[in-house]
Image (cartoon, rainbow, N blue to C red; front, side, top):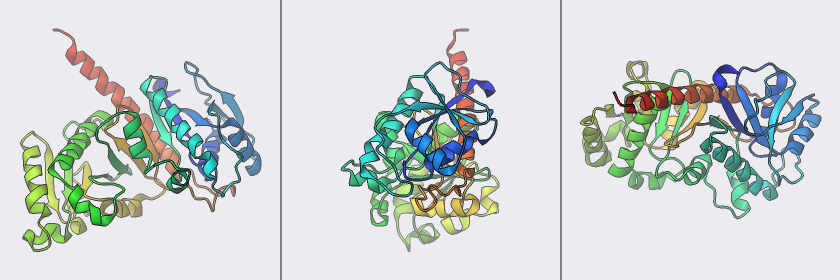
Length: 341
């Protein structure tokens, strides 16, 4: 096991491709410690459906994960009702959230060095009468932090969001000096902590076309974004913007940047997903733990067919491990600094 890192992997929506993506990990020898957080029966049934010969090894804290081909370490979670691949069932919504809770609490308690999440289905969880807007917000509440930041990344590009799952009509009012300050501070701090970037260089998109065109196409840049960025620059942050989003995502700007801060979900993510769909990773910043995820949904139409591509999951695991190692190094440096001379 490389560097002693152990990651929790939640299997996501039982009817989707998450369980089989987890099972695909058993296809070859691994050098990253992974423990699947799921119903053991669910994994056994999906393996049988796909004709996969996978041995599921029970795991508990303190054990080394199984790393060899043909096997997976599993921390069993009860409560999963009978599953038909591709068919959602609200009866499994609580079970899905229980897997997230087990993984996150395991990270907080030191049993895991980070968590990786397969996709969940927000609609079916809400249909069960449980208010749920996504992994990001769920983990924010569970970890009891005031603000989290969604970051999607490929090897070439990182895009963070000021606002996430909001109707477009609500976005301008949500971009306040307080929110922008919090998000920028988290992004800057976590690029240092989780990615080892000593002095992050961040490009900031404007909200309006042409970044407001001097106020002719909106005044948010003049009244909110630029004044806030000026105050943040005074603290030492390297922030460039607000820049027009239609020209920001070009080599002229990106070649010298560590991340882009977009104002809303569909301003930044379409560019990133076009550039690297299937090999991108969703990261939650602002948490006291490492959390990465795949960049796609439950793909119900592919569930049970054996055609699901685990590329994004492999990326999420690799990035999760790198973030966990960076966090250990960062905390080690912080502890060293705190020691008396």
